[in-house]
Amino acid sequence: MKRRELILRIRFLTAGVIFIAVLIGIRLYNVQIHNASAYQDKAERQYVHTARNLYSRGQIFFTTKDGEMLSAASIQSGYVLAVNPQHVTDVDAFCSSLQKYLKDSADKCSTRASLPERSYVELVPDLTVEEAEEIELLDLDGALLYKNQWRYYPGGTVAARSIGFIGYDDTGTELHGKFGLERYYDETLYEKDEALSVNFFAELFSNLGDTLYDREEILSGDVVTTLEPAVSRVLDTVLEETNQKYDSKTTGAIVMDPHTGEIIAMNVVPGLDLNDRAEATIEQFQNPLVENVYEMGSIIKPLTVAAGLDAGVISPGTTYYDPGCIELNTYTICNYDLRGRGTVPMQEILNQSLNTGVAYIANLMGKDRFRDYFLGYKLGTETGIDLPNEAYGLVNNLNSPREVEYATASFGQGIALTPIATVRALATLANGGKLVTPHLVNRIEYKDGSVKEIRYPEGEQVLKPETSETISRMLKTVVDDALRGGNEARPNHTIGAKTGTAQIPDPVNGGYYDDKYLHSFFGYFPVYDPKFIIFMYTVEPKGVRYASETLTDPFLQLTDFLINYYSIPPDR
Image (cartoon, rainbow, N blue to C red; front, side, top):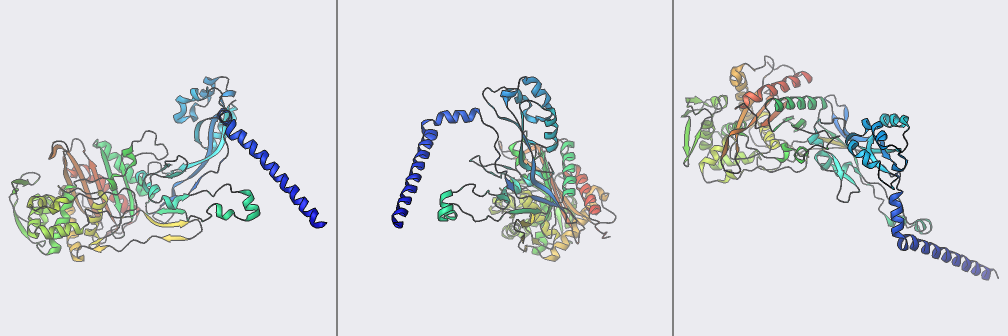
């Protein structure tokens, strides 16, 4: 009897469940298929803001000289300002009252607030809490405020091309890094929301929920950079002033520790404000310090002299005869002023930037050995910097059978390099001859509390330590005796430096422009135990011919700031 009653109950419950399932099925068919168009239209006309999971993303930090972390990219909380056109009686008055808050939506307010049969239209996605409170006090009919979050860059323009920014992916549903560190470390910074729904009955009765979606936690965290905020701000100011003064196309710089490859500051102007990118161009999003190549000119000469010293074909006391111009493979190569100096020592090649001098060294070394040294500097390869889209240098001329390509390469023409590869090669002159890995991030702090210190490989030894010391002494002499007649030497700190003026190639007619130049400047200090190496360049400055005119003052301005800011002790 009991068994029979149990069977009846089970059948009754089963029938009830089937009946309810049939009703639900009929209802779903009615909503999703039979009347789908009507419901979609109704949803569109009656849409209102619904609270969704506000996205989360790891932070990017600057690091001050004292080790303090300051935010470079974070999540900002605020409000969305929207309008319900059905409740707006005077569109002009409504938009006028909100004018100061509308930003780039000001011209669209009247149109959006007048849309028929709409109950929700967004006007501004990123109001601050203070702005939202002010709007609430206006008590405007039709004004809607909802909580929101977005990516915020406290520095604005500071190191903007290195920090990068985020944007929606191809599906239009998820935010990912598009440029700079945001893109390179996107897998670390990105925090994917957990699945919001599962099969309720499977979870309740069968404990199958774990099989319906992946619960595996993606290890995400914050990225801590080597970028120093105060130095970055000063660098940006110097770059802006220089670019405006000479009406250049672009001006950029890198400040790096030559021993470790830590980048303290780097940027290019004209730049962009990461919080207001509406007027920025795609070129301003990119980072030409990493993505573009240039013929660098005479700042490459110290690499040639160092190679000659390291190979033993010259010494600082070696002399050569400078005729002013030489002929190689039917091409004529001349000094910048076409003058010959007669018999001069190697130091004058750097002091007076003599093209014939470095061509003489390249000839003494021979094509194979010269090629080995220049390829040993890794001028044609990626540096491994933690930024996206790094370009390779164009150094095919180093495979030429003709002498003229090696001669031009010896003074930085005919080979095109990225600025970051250039500064890495030049750092070998300062750090004892090692190739370091330039980088902007030194650790990742994960959400689970663990910390990953990023280790970079010890650099390959490409020059003997004594070569580094000798070329550093020669570059110090350039500043002490030759740069503006020695008037820019600092009384308490030694500086080694070299300028570069390169003709810009004409891609249409071949050869080089007669009136367009790329100016470059590099230097490091103190010379025998350098704390920083600075590389600067400006493209197509107007009204000046030589880099000593455009970049000497900006370089020394940065040098003086760094010496004072870091309290670098005197070395003489």
